[in-house]
Image (cartoon, rainbow over all chains, first blue to last red; front, side, top):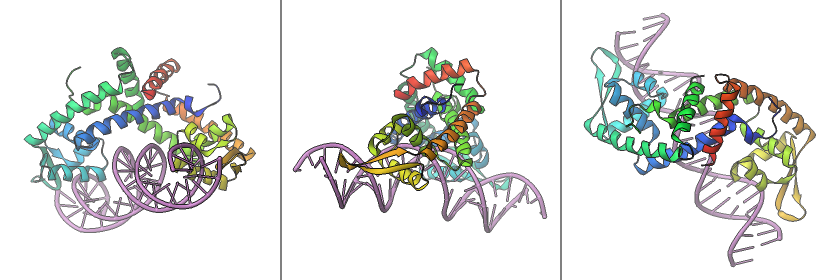
Length: 141
Length: 141
DNA sequence: CAGATCTCAGAATGACTGATATTC
DNA sequence: CGAATATCAGTCATTCTGAGATCT
């Protein structure tokens, strides 16, 4: 590999810039709906896995234990999910998505589809697939 | 495009995760040397463009006006760059890299090469090139 | 005067760490 | 007792906005 000439040609820099643009678009779209990325990830997990503990939810949604607590309580205040103590294990708080939460998730999912189109509009569908495959291998290290 | 099933298959999510892993590796490597990503970007720009105003430096290093000010003063305190008022325009502060700064940049550049290898080790060289090309087109929008 | 440059103060976000109380 | 769960406290890096001072 040639010595580094300019930082803006570094692959890590290109990755950082592309992700920053993606994040801006994603966040602007979700902010219009009054939601955060955390909100979407939590509702998305709950819709597919059903009721689960906050711990399991945090693992599945890739959220820190600190942030899962805050996010879940915010969503509970908006009646998008319900919480109740686990009768099997009093340490756990079981979380489940509500009907309102499912409608909210459907709304956010449409926004996410718009985001995908906006972010990857510079690429063809085939190129986007290639990129996704390479990114998936990078992300897991 | 199929309806969204799971957030962790979204291309924007893969992009975000890959960038997060890259950032962790980059930051850990720079932290060992007591430097930040801002530091490296500023020194890298100064080494290639020569002396310039803080404004031009901020544009080239993709740094906010707030952060260019803080970063430059920190690097000045470490004697890695020098600042002097522009005799042509008293509004400007001209910044130039010092010899010590060039040595520091060389050290950081070696670290950056290690980072590239670590981040992109899951991919072949050809795949990394393909990825970089796609990311470059994404980053500019 | 408008405009450019630099500085300071603060904030929002994402990701993370330490500590604590409770429970198994 | 050790281990797991949820919560509260704060940190850190990145990015950005508003305001003011100085100068062209």
